[in-house]
Amino acid sequence: MKRKRQKTSDPRPHKTQNHSHSTKTSDVGVAKKQRVEGDDGHWIKKRLSLSDVNESARLLLGNKDVRKHVLALMDEDRCAACESREGLRVKMWDLDTLSEHELSLKQWQTGSFVINNNWSMEFVKRRNLQEGDYIGLRWDAENLGFFFHKFNAQS
Image 1 (cartoon, helix red, strand yellow):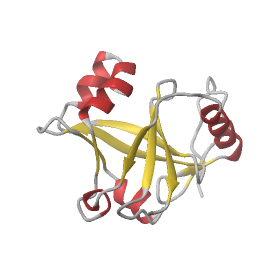
Image 2 (tube, one colour; image 1 turned 45 degrees about the vertical axis):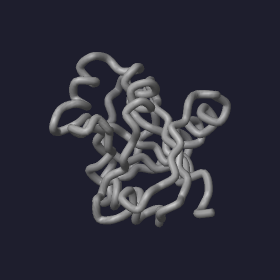
Image 3 (cartoon, helix red, strand yellow; image 1 turned 180 degrees about the horizontal axis):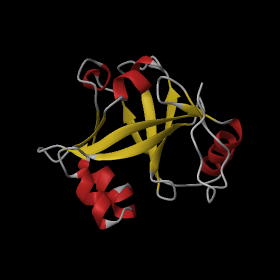
Image 4 (cartoon, helix red, strand yellow; image 1 turned 180 degrees about the vertical axis):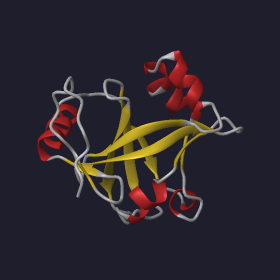
């Protein structure tokens, strides 16, 4: 495996990248998990629908939640990128597996927001997500990405 080159101004440890574009670093992962667990930040919680886990290959998020808990914490350029056709590339840190993934956040013409570009492979398949699973996302304004957590299995 190749190691990503690290900027000298970045005090974080090197992350090892594998073929799925996920990274694992136990020290960074534990620190992020502890920071989230000790914080009362807002989680966007969602019970997954069939369209979130099927061949649609995207996670549908409500407009109000994304505007209030994500876009409100972004600068103007990033907000505009979310509304563009390409969307905004964002990191998603899986707190359960301590892995980092890159996806896109974008707004559809309907006004809803979606997370796509690797959602199906990096989360649905890798985590075996099913219709009815309960997940949470929380925006990390400091690192410009989401924290992901699977709260429980289907009930």
